Amino acid sequence: MEKNLSVYIETYGCQMNLSDTEIVSRILKNAGYELVERPNSANVILLNTCSVRENAERKIRERLSVLKKYKNNSKPVVVGILGCMAERQRNKILENNSIVDLAVGPDEYRKVPQLIQNALLGEKGIAVRLSRVETYDDIEPLRKEGISAWISIMRGCDKFCSYCVVPFTRGRERSRKLFSIIAEVEKLQNEGFKEITLLGQNVNSYKCPETNSDFADLLKECAIRFPTIRIRFITSHPQDMSDKLIETIANYDNICKYIHLPIQSGSNRILELMNRNYTYEHYLGRIRKIRELMPNCALSTDIIAGFPTETLEDHRLTLRALEEIRFDGAYMFRYSPREHTKAYKLTDDVPEKEKIRRLNEIIDLQNKISKEINLTEHGKIHLVLAEGPSKKDKTYWQGRTDTNKVVIFKPLKSTQVGEVVKVKITNSTSATLFGELVQ
Ligand code: SAH
Ligand code: SF4
Ligand code: F3S
Image: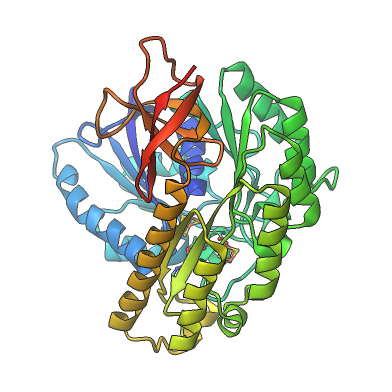
């Protein structure tokens, strides 16, 4: 290999992709590449992509047209597409974009160094086979910061929600062995990390292939062994949110009291068409159980507006659900038809304008609720994990509460990144809390 080849990676999409970029970075570092923070001088530019909605793919196409300029330099520059869009579009991505030299799906990252080598010799390459076993268990992610770490505990998804490309882009669900996850957390603890987030498309269906331990067992094991580490997890599925799991979250102080539980719609007819396998009443039952055991647990959700055949009455049921449940926050999207999914066969019959109108109604209502909930935080004291200077104003720092809310506060000279500080909340918006340090 040529000496000192440098790679720049840009990441789009969900946390699984952020975590995968850390895995690819390690694979490339082990192969002798230098990882750089800017595309300007890089020999290799990789985009780790998302396909979940058409917008996500459009962003990548636009980015590629900007990256074209790096191709015109005197030195050769390799451009590669990793992740879900590579998996979904396969050779089309090479055919439609002359600047793309390689396309690598989520289960083929071990081949990236070889494919880059081939591309440097002028050979375009593609690797998009999905695997039933690949979990990159033996690869230690190359992490950038030292406080909070993502840990992929499983890959793929078997739920096949009718609108979703993920089962097609990430393949069948498979879990890592419990002992290897525990070993990874132990190493992170020794390196000074303060927080871990266990990641999977549906962490509730985690099953250790060796011991048969379920997700509640894994959480309990982590909570007991690492009492000083904050433990988070995403995403949960309402169908698998068992009493045992809720009790486990309630039983340990270091398991964060924050649950992301996508509801998608408040209409049972739409939920069935979405193949979500639960009713609104079941969902509500799970929320009640969570709040019964953890009155202060924060909850967030995902909503899709304008799914095929959604009537004004269905839409009203979604708004009613938001009012009844009162989530702390939500990620809200308008339906985007995805090829190969079951819903793709349904007519996308809610006009774009109407989808946007419904979505805005949902967003407005949720923002109002988030704002009201955050007002009730005023005067409360939270334990906040200090993350460092805030993006807007460096004299202020930001951190997160146990309930995953961002807090902005003025640090002391002695405040350290990774320290857990006590902050009294004095102000808020729908998305952020502001506060003062207290002793
Ligand atoms: N596994 C997670 C996340 C999946 S993708 C889960 O089950 O919740 C994140 C969110 O994107 C989904 O929850 C859904 O709300 C949204 N989403 C997925 N496919 C979509 C589509 N085709 N159109 C609009 N939103 C979609
Ligand atoms: Fe997609 Fe459903 Fe799987 Fe989530 S659970 S990744 S929405 S198929
Ligand atoms: Fe996107 Fe793939 Fe994640 S489609 S949401 S990057 S699993």
